[in-house]
Image (cartoon, rainbow, N blue to C red; front, side, top):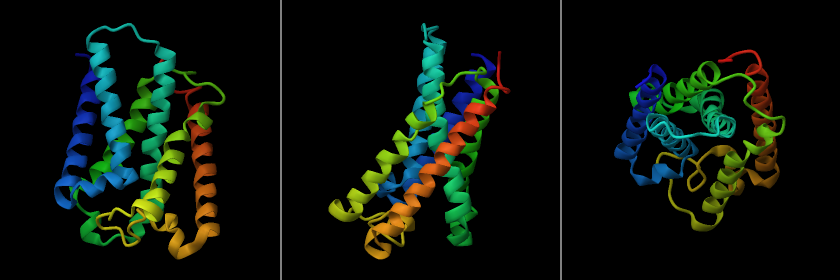
Length: 205
């Protein structure tokens, strides 16, 4: 097993641990959070590519790396939104614990570093950042559907059945929620194009 495979296997294991600790503490309702779902996406994808590489499977490297860019962006927004919007509102005991650091910091930053350093340069196409928005857009529809229709309770969410305060249509109205969504969408695109630009200069040849 190569150093790259070991690193990705360790990162996947940390992702599994973080998600498991979240569910063990607060139950299966944690699966309604974007944070938990994006971590599951990351460790599932890492396990997938490690297994393919270990079996020396013939890969379409360009397509795989472009898909990996989308997975990286999906977990990047977990880190960014949590750190700048949600962390200031969290109680100290809910912030300073290993499960929180695993899903919001260690796995996201580990995945970002993996993509920037270990993946080759010039892996992406000009419209890939738009394609990468599929994951957060899909989750936005899912969160609104749960908040308005299914109304499954979300552990620890003050705005339950909405997972995050900026998705709470009932409390803040459509104008506020759509404005928040648009701001996040634009920020997501900018980060996506930032990654695309960065990968023109950093990474393997």
